[in-house]
Image (cartoon, rainbow, N blue to C red):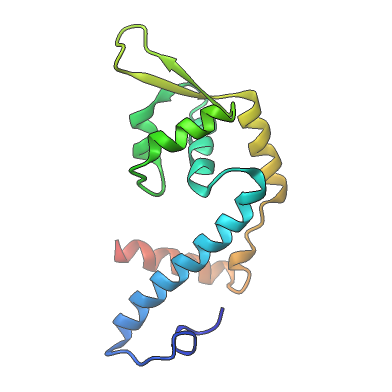
Length: 145
């Protein structure tokens, strides 16, 4: 991926417009790389996020809690969990006190998949920037939000 101005061959009204378009362009570039990385594992980046949330929780948690913790607010989170359940990577546990509440826990298979993924995972998408630049970038992105 090159400079956005050469990649989409256009001029910008000002530097803030260029920065905004560059953020969107880069987000799509990262998303494309993530989709390609997770494809051989049979899950999406959003499903990976759900598995990581469950592993980090260390116990069964409510579906709503998972939705709140997701990096990307997915309106289809329940469908994503259905697919993880079908693959035996998570279990649904009905709440004995309230039938409307469902808790989710990660299975042994889910934990094994996370271990397998972590062996292959690399942060090389950011290999062209230093630790100091990564910190600066993170601070600027926080400032935008």
